[in-house]
Length: 308
Image (cartoon, rainbow, N blue to C red; front, top):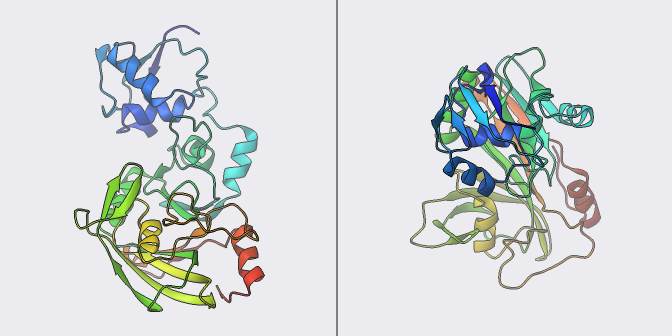
């Protein structure tokens, strides 16, 4: 494959250049992309561009021969199998948004060594629209549950602002080792990023998580409902660890002493259960995602009570 000159599609208007490459060339690693940009092998309208450059519809991108990094521009990047899969995740759809139940283990966006991700499948969720739906928030790769996509640019701006200003109440369910005390409260602990982890620190950014214990097994396990009032990375995971109740299956936030329960699957037991969109819709609209099988089986195994 030689050099290609590719016009920016209308649905990609306003997209950053690095996100454009992640969408259409998922096999292209970020470090390789940076090198191509630095050596001027990638250009926009004949000029050098930075990774964060915002594209406009109709602009022409020079794409050098990428060989092993297979382009997915021709097919939209979605196989029939993946298209059927991502459509099966849809919980709700209207003129403005699509809500899906993201499974644990599926990354929301691509990156180094992450070739299969939700962002690369979004073309399959156009339905009757010309625009590809856009991500307006994120959840961790190992976290399951409700994820909202905007179907139109105006909807994306409205939803992104609502998530940023915390006008949408999000509720998670977590299975923890240890039982939070008191049974209901507000974890108001600043979080600071150290390496790849968030740590409780007075030097960190303000972070608050409301929680309540739904049910527990003695002092061993608890089913906890958690609602973040702020949006820090890994907030619920880091906050529950900070009070001595790490989430089952969490390899990153498991305190100083790793605990295991051989009866549980090796998955993270954190589920984005519901999002309340009533405030922006000006009518009742709460979207819920059913618990994944591994979570449901754990509740049954330990006799933990929970009603949807």
